[in-house]
Length: 126
Image (tube, rainbow, N blue to C red; front, side, top):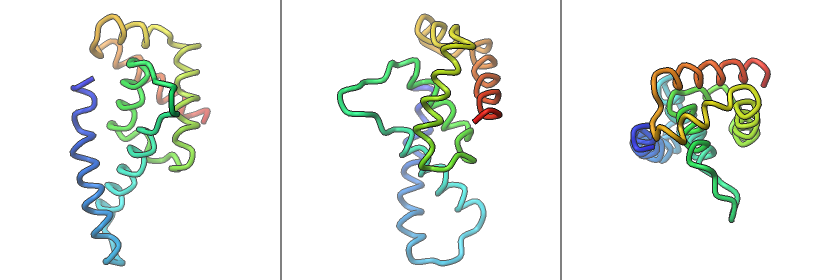
């Protein structure tokens, strides 16, 4: 979890800084716009319903998708919908991803390949 979630702190800090700066400036370059979009998606991805804790393996999967920028082309208001659909897709098509993460406590190379494939396949249908 630490390995996957590590970049989130830095990206959220950059997002907050750029968001406050962007209020004053009207023209933003492409890199700044991408960082702002990435920060918005990460904030949305981190939201969880109250009293419904998410399993660690699911947290790892969605944090992986967010940090590897698979959510950039998803509208911010549809991130939660994407998240739920991705979990359902993995549970039905590639359940070994969740079990591997739960058992190994890391994302091995083989599990990462399965996860990337599952995310890309689900995005085609989303």
